[in-house]
Length: 79
Image 1 (cartoon, rainbow, N blue to C red):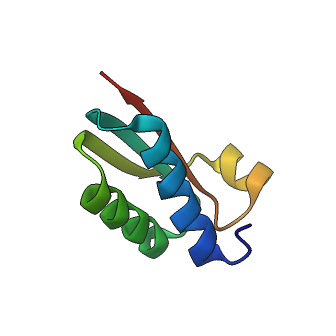
Image 2: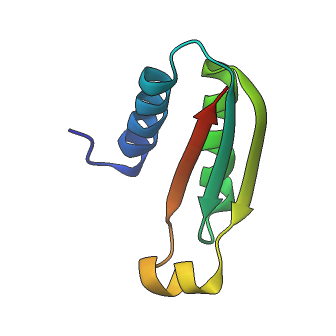
């Protein structure tokens, strides 16, 4: 079970890899005020998965209000 932020990020990438298999992915990463950690997730995904496209952006104000600082969400689909 992942307990630290680093372990959680690694687990997110592992789950993405497990569910995607060897397919090409379209990935979106949304964060709330943590661009450095978002870049870390982006680099991990790009190095371990085959991505046709990858977008990273800051979440809306409502996302920040409801989830707080430090949220990182990864969404993807495959062809």
